Image (cartoon, rainbow, N blue to C red; front, top):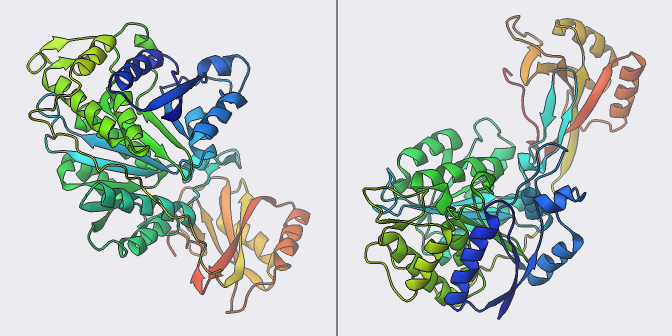
Length: 477
């Protein structure tokens, strides 16, 4: 028996969790569970994290967590518990299968069968934001080589295990050449280790458009965090309904399984919520813990129920549905079909007693890192970049002012008067030869700036790594 942790959550959470647990019991899943409470009630009790230490202890002990949706109270600065859990537990991979159930669930894409694999810990979801001037705030986009390698390798191992034929990588590295460029580069490196799996890459905007228009051209899609969040919801919706989709959040030691939809408090307690998303997440959980036999039974019973036209209100259509049922009635219909297999939808058949085995990240040889200068960010209320440059050039040493940008666009030297400027200026100081900059030059520069009354709000050192520039050019250079 496998012991898991269960949370019934908020809103419709208790209803769909009770329905799911009743199906797991009827299918003889080899699990026991301990229930924890977290979410809205815990937040409002004065716990700003939304979860108690005992709940963390349960999840970390049992390693497998099946959770219903929760509500984060509005206002009060409450942080998303979902994001906190993914990052605190190292759940680096979010997996969302999005498949059409045509003709029983309405969709414009009857051949669709796509799995979205989203990096789950970093990118803009690091949540590092600052207001720097009256007019400018920033959010740091953090992409790491370990994060890229873990998620990309997971995608290829997933495709290998589930006999998928192709993996598509979606990034925006035509613009973000260092962050998204790293993700794309790692994808290309790891793809060479899996010659039997086709690999292609798309710029995320056209890739998302293509995915929304012709999803049957895709198989497995791997993306950084923010793009993955957006694209996975789009993909789930066009497959038929967000309410049908479950997801897995996988880490090296722990895993969390959940429906992708929210707690829907407006319909809580009305026995009309669709438990399918959480049930399909539970099927993913059973596969994860090696109970593929039970996963097959439940998935086939669920598919048979959908085929028989027994539908909850969110997917009920008079031309294809035969019976409109509530949450508990739908669960009972699935239970009644345990042992049956669908006649038109795919019969679930999973490889038995197998698990993904992702090797731990191994650090690469340290690069030869050379300091080349510094970007000094300044809060300045003027508008003429030439005046700012005149002031800042007096601080030149072995590092000299070479460029000023505003919102990334070069405004000095030779900027355009049409360029709109805010009060946030990036002032780049660089060495003019191939030698490294003197590290002492940067604090000396900052001291001169302070003495002159220049409002320096942040700095970023400029480095080369093994001779390769590790910083972006200004737009217009």
